[in-house]
Amino acid sequence: MIGFRGTADLMLVIKVDAEGEWEEIYYGDFSDVLKHARYSKRDNKHTLTISKLRQLAEEGAGRITLDQNRS
Image 1 (cartoon, rainbow, N blue to C red):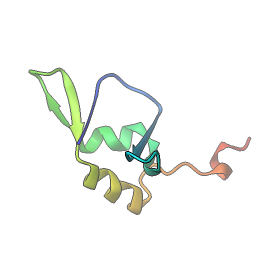
Image 2: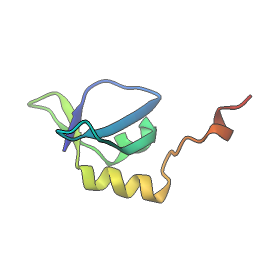
Image 3: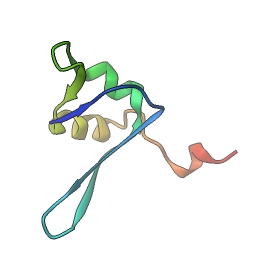
């Protein structure tokens, strides 16, 4: 599970293991993540499970590609 506060345009979530190997879990539009996150008033933060982030990434939610970044 990840937790976050505040807002952003984009979100990048990576998993780094003990050997330093990494895996991109999600890279895309922050607003798509925020729509699915739960808010904890007590902790003043939003949370979202890694499995939900993977699902959003597979569905292509907010996916950023090089073509979208070109002017």
